[in-house]
Image 1 (tube, rainbow, N blue to C red):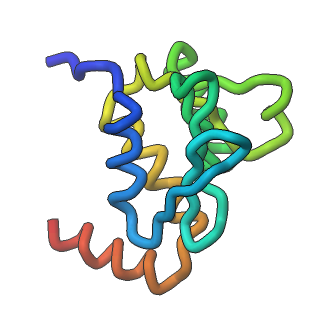
Image 2 (image 1 turned 60 degrees about the vertical axis):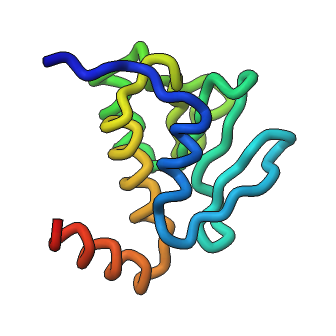
Length: 121
């Protein structure tokens, strides 16, 4: 069965805020998301694209696997971020890339609690 593509802004916000320690606030004139004050993601392009700080390796793997959904621009090329087209990403893929990003930025105590909860599932 094919997974449905497309995540709304509300859906992306819900996913982002489901991670412990996430905060929403302005970022370059758009909605931004931080984990304990550290930048994790922000909306751009009239809320059609989500910028996610996930690391260079994750970015490159995502872009190779699904270039229609995951991409970069010249501006972001030197930053460890990937741009995500919300209208073509699956909820599972967005959750996965957000989890990778969150695990890189979250404090140790939050990561340990998250991993303990994930082990129970």
